[in-house]
Length: 404
Image: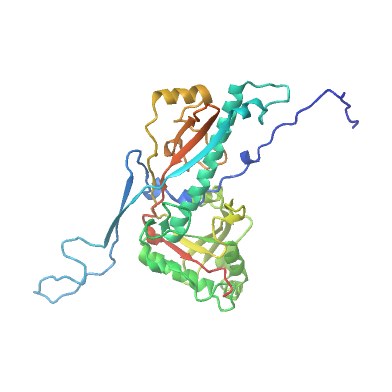
């Protein structure tokens, strides 16, 4: 093919490419919350500043045998009046997410991505609306990543930060998970003495007893934990035995369905299924998704050394708290419509987000100008809380991928 020669004054503008439009949004942890099929609820609280949590645990004790002609009696802390279980109530303020993005009037005098060429010459209003749409979508991406981090805290730790990103403390949300549901193993699976199948049986036993859920288990292994699991001698010895090899099926053509397919769409990688020595069936996933930390380092949402097991039908709710601003007025709504071409009630959302994860009603959108009217700030606020209501249906091993 002969190249086409253009004269010195002809220009061809290549199509714009915004990488962010093609990057998937990892939402595996968020996908566990607000599922109607498990009784999970999505609650909006636009006018309440306090979230009060009440957890009522159930006993699993047997009835008593008593001599005939004797009256019934209290056995331990099980009372004849039917007020069974241990109750816990606590209250915390809703967290506040606030993301802002400045737009400068100087930006409206320069070409923005999307203009067809250097001579397209969009007017300032068109450029402003384009920048505002792209800006709000980028703010939403940042918020979604933080929500994934917070939802992961609740699932893995049974706690959630409410004041600052970091390890939850005494003033943060604590879903009162059973201490036996978080385990530091005697030996990690990369150690010669590591026993991953035994550890998985222990996890499943605890989920059956304390979690009181079904036995349709899901496991998520971190990168190091998966590598150690596959190389561990207990695994290779048991499943290489011709009597047991059909009990482990990790396959390239493994196709999950139902809720598992939703988890894959949210960023999980499906490995397959296994049956433990005690007979528990577990579907195994990994979750390699990452975000960029404040220092620029690539950081995984799921720790490489963790192994996490849960009941697939455990109830998890999600709550969305109020904004921290004066009520938006009809004049402000009209201003956003005229200036940005959008209503604050119809926030533009990122592409590549699985259905059911978000909707505009979870957030509060506005903008405000600088006194000299040379700048405007786009703003989104939200207050997400992710209670693992059936909190003992989740089990985390914090050093499964370790060699110690």
